[in-house]
Image (cartoon, rainbow, N blue to C red; front, side, top):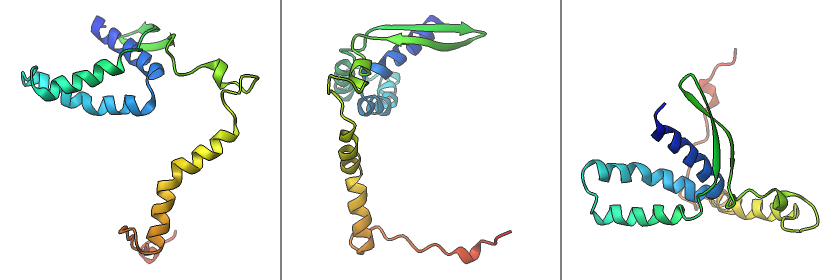
Length: 143
């Protein structure tokens, strides 16, 4: 297996514990465009420079150890750790620290789902601009 592939897999695993979901997702979105700019020789293009600034910022705290197992041409992650990991067992526990309170989840769920709830209510009132046709179940035969 090529060394670059191993480095890529190890780095990707460290990113998965050091970056939040939204940042990692956006990084995945721009990766294709970034690669395309380089492929077409547009290294000095302002967009490539701007994307590089984003990537550089995301990598500030991507650091740590990744253990890989190699077997018959495949690579499996056996472990990973980082001083910058966003997963902290001491914060995730329900002990004395009060970093996380289970009741916080209820408020988060309500806030996170609020845009979908408002859209649904507007749709019911006919004001959302999203009008879904009532399904016609007569077209489906039951066996």
